[in-house]
Length: 326
Ligand code: ASP
Image 1: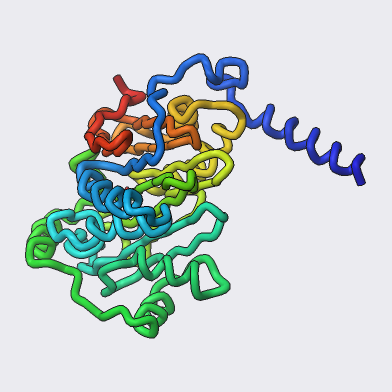
Image 2 (image 1 turned 90 degrees about the vertical axis):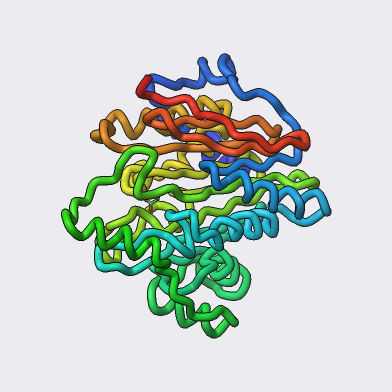
């Protein structure tokens, strides 16, 4: 038995070794750590709307609530905001005028839940939480997810605001599908938090890329792509063109790189480098946020313009992420 255990241990070290690309190897991990401020609890989230979400999450954590509750309640603030046109209520629709939502949530025990292609429910993150807590599954999709939500006390709502409808009608004139860097027809909220017990959780919720094909699902509800946490290591969340994130399973990759010794910053940079290596990144934005269990954080994007909110040592602030394209 012990031989078998040794073999497994050796094999996984071997795999980890080959996993590292030439740009980031174990020897240069830990040399660079631009975001080495520590301090728990920590809350981090994507884009400007993350600021208010962090405030809410911190209120819960300060009062002794668990990270899983904080991340859910935090991103609900964004989901409910009609002025946020890339998440929940008020999100820009697909090319046929449907607001379809994706979300996932994961706790410190590795439990997770998600919903994809969900219509008419304002808080997909809470449906994802119910999938996690009350079903033997990880993901429910489309009509099944909707019926599950209704059975669990959620209400059917029209999520297409007048503002979003007007914008969609304007878009229809040219019907040109082209995600625009940063201003975008997207901007998911991903939020990670470590609570007073030192436990990590994450949440990610979006209306996805505006003007997407009906039925399109992005990275945000995919555990390991849009978000991933591991209580031994830390967590990561993603924003931007989901197809690029899915092709590299970005959040899982970044957490695994931290497991191998990378700082959150190094891991995010490597996550971006895996994308730019093989994909046409010129017109596409992707941003990653990561934290480790020490409370260090990292952030990196393909292009400039990705900002994030960091709540640490009692202060909430916006920070501009560094980018691959200088
Ligand atoms: N990642 C999301 C998606 O592809 C969009 C975004 O982050 O803005 O659906």
